[in-house]
Length: 185
Image 1 (spheres, rainbow, N blue to C red):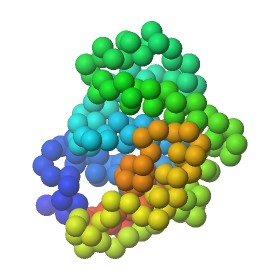
Image 2 (tube, rainbow, N blue to C red):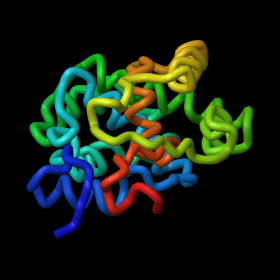
Image 3 (spheres, one colour):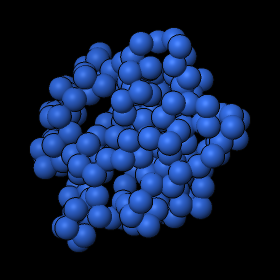
Image 4 (tube, rainbow, N blue to C red):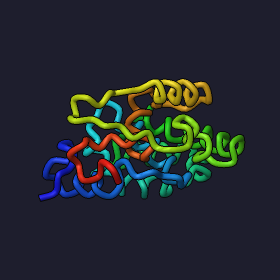
């Protein structure tokens, strides 16, 4: 029996996500953009809902190619609003497009989104030592700073709690609890 973080439960998709992705440092700009978008899509919903729709999101949003998404027009938005495979929320769909444009600007300014986003943790993962899920915060000073800066740059659905979930998902933070087999990966 493998000890993992309790939130992964018994759902094979959740366990696979926990075991193979959550907390693993990501440095690929396209993957970082995908996760930032999906974490924003999660707002008000559970992560498993978005995780189950992730392949649909990838197909619907050009595999998170920011250059393509930045050019989406009103016809494409209408098609997306009809797509039952994603969460059909007009504000969230519009945020993907806005965020794609802002993401491209960040890449231009910093050379990569990776270089920009990892500055909030000093370029390396923050490894925490939580004994239980109850100890894990919803946000931190780092996620507050990230959120504030992303908002200043025009991104949407990037509140501090969403930023912290993004940081956990992309390995900027390792929040695997002490008993989890991935705590000291």
